[in-house]
Image 1 (tube, rainbow, N blue to C red):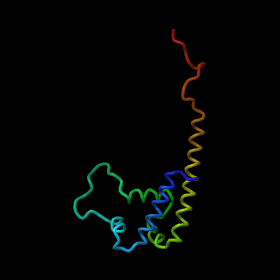
Image 2 (cartoon, one colour):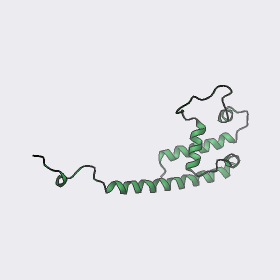
Image 3 (cartoon, rainbow, N blue to C red):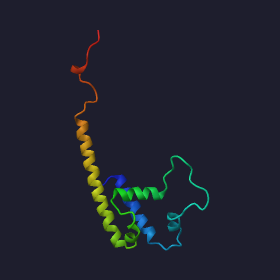
Image 4 (tube, helix red, strand yellow):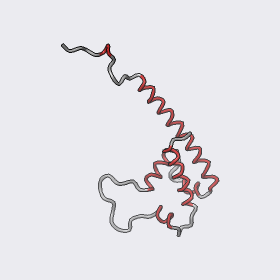
Amino acid sequence: MPSVFTLLQQTLLCWAGHVIRMSVERLPRCILYGELQSGARSHGGQMKIFKDTLKASMKDFNFDLTLWEALAKNRSAWCGPVIKGVKTYEQQRLQQSSVYSKDQQHKTPWPTVTQLHVIQ
């Protein structure tokens, strides 16, 4: 079963595909492609906007960032790669977590009694 984070990423990608299929006048689509007309974002660490999160999810699921809009316009063509991306991302995540847990099994967090030296 996929993790909660993976399910959230899947939902985000499905919703982005839904927004792409909307007409250009709809508010969610306008917001997705919206830019600041005047001013600029402040320097330093920025709060993530929806586009940043969407781009990170697409990278995690191995999507081509230049072709995703054309793919998302066809709903049946969009669902397959999203599900495939979920499966590959989960496999990678599980492999990384099993490697991490194996590394942690060999480390003892606290010294054993035989390792302690008595200070007199």
